[in-house]
Amino acid sequence: MIKGKKVYDPLTNTWSTGYWIPLYDYRGKVIDYLPLWQGKTVAFDFDGVIHKYSKGWQDGSIYDEPNKDVLDLMLILQLMEIPCVIISTRDPKQIKEWWDKQGITLKAKILDWDTSFYNDCSCIGITNRKIPAQLYIDDRAYRYTGQTVQEFLTDCAEKTSVEFD
Image 1 (cartoon, one colour):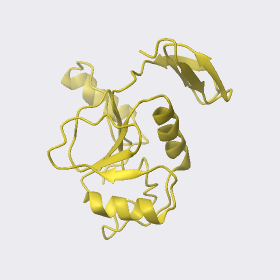
Image 2 (cartoon, one colour; image 1 turned 135 degrees about the vertical axis):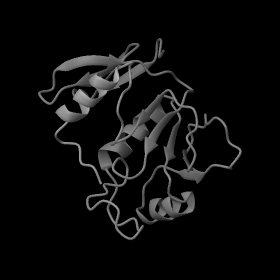
Image 3 (cartoon, helix red, strand yellow; image 1 turned 90 degrees about the vertical axis):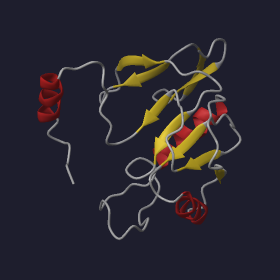
């Protein structure tokens, strides 16, 4: 964990020494803490997380602006010495071209096909493979913690905001 390092609190816009990243509900109340380790990757999905993807899949083009809150998070993680990587089924070259056209100040590079782990905090990695990470941030993820089939189906039925394409 991040022992003895400064941890950024985005709600209060302050830095404090600690082990955990606070997670907030919509009212600003701390509901949990997320442990993140220095030197271990956090992976971000591209469409719906970094690229706003407001109209869903169109003709394969990347048409929307970036999600500035996610870019801020990536910067904060880099400052905390936590590497970040973009994972997508898209061609990494397409993402890199879009990234460069947006004028994003964070550097990004396409990872070699044989990259198994990513630990470079100097720039954001881009790949179309799922590489190991301590955390995957994805707009369409479901957290599996050993649910039965019935629990899974119930969870999905309760998530009325989920859209199925």
